[in-house]
Amino acid sequence: MSNDAIRELWLQHRAAQDKYTYFLLAVTASAIAFAVQKTGDAVFARTLAPLGLAVLAWGGSFYCGCKNLIWVQTALMANYNLLQLRAGVHPQQPDHPDLSAAAQRGTGNALNSNVDRAQSYALSQFRLAIVGAILFLLWHVIEIYNRTPAT
Image 1 (cartoon, rainbow, N blue to C red):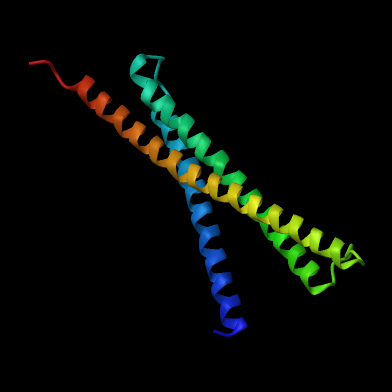
Image 2: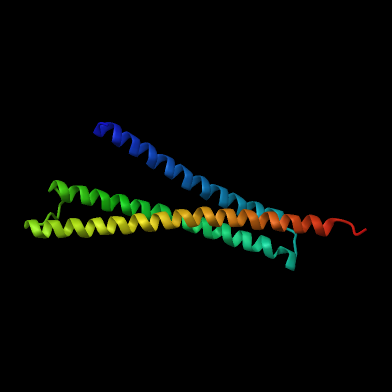
């Protein structure tokens, strides 16, 4: 596979990941807005607890999505710096080979750490969105049950 093909595949992968993150951000923001709209005239009651927890989960998902985007950008910058160091064109390129190797190791370690954090936030974003959906459905079932006449 040529370098151009590898680069194109990487660009497509990055674009798909970004779209997925933004999709989940939009879903959770919409879910929070929908929950607020559905409870506009509600008074505090225990039956709202699952909905409140759902909103907290969606808020956590939104936060994790934002943090994911930040860590992805940080990882991309670390990757860019690492490529510059390897090519010997970094603006602060060390002159000595040992220092250059140490800079590359340090930047590589930072890159791996940034990627791990981005992945952790991405996973948390997804999980919290699902937890919020489950809690919302639980709240909805409780509301239906409470409206069902006793026989």
